[in-house]
Length: 238
Image (cartoon, rainbow, N blue to C red):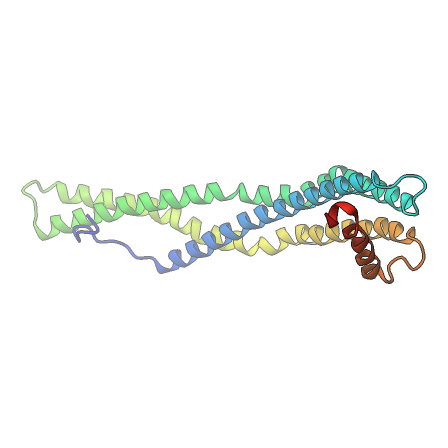
């Protein structure tokens, strides 16, 4: 009926602006939760992949190999990294990042339900108000219809106004609290990444230190030399 012009539609630009802010905030928080969880999943996948690579590499070297110690240290380092992610980092990250952001997301359904209720009550008010206007323009033979319609429209307006005022007050307050609420989680994200990377650095640096002196120098040339020897094998030349 509003599309056909039979019922006048109330325009509330203030509320529309707040609703857009709320929807934008909701989208950003949901994305934050998704990406934060994706980071934890990625770290888990990385440490698992490192551990698998290390297990394979360790099997290449026997005790007589100069890199036997390095292979064993690398396997042990990746194993500790994976264990720390699954125990310490996983638990701390959930408590300080994922759970708080998830609880914030849990507030949104109440606001969305209130917005839906407001919309329905506004439709009721617009319909009843249009009914009053029609009775004014074309009075009914039943003189009681107009006062009754006006009373119904006033009641609908009061219900709508109450919900509208509550949303106009609560939405800005919710959005204004976002920084104070998310600050600890942001700090936790940075500290957890720092702790993981520092731990990984120290563990892998210990592996690097176990390589023979000068091992890194001339690496490309040595690799190419061995590869050429492989090419010269009888099977490769046949």
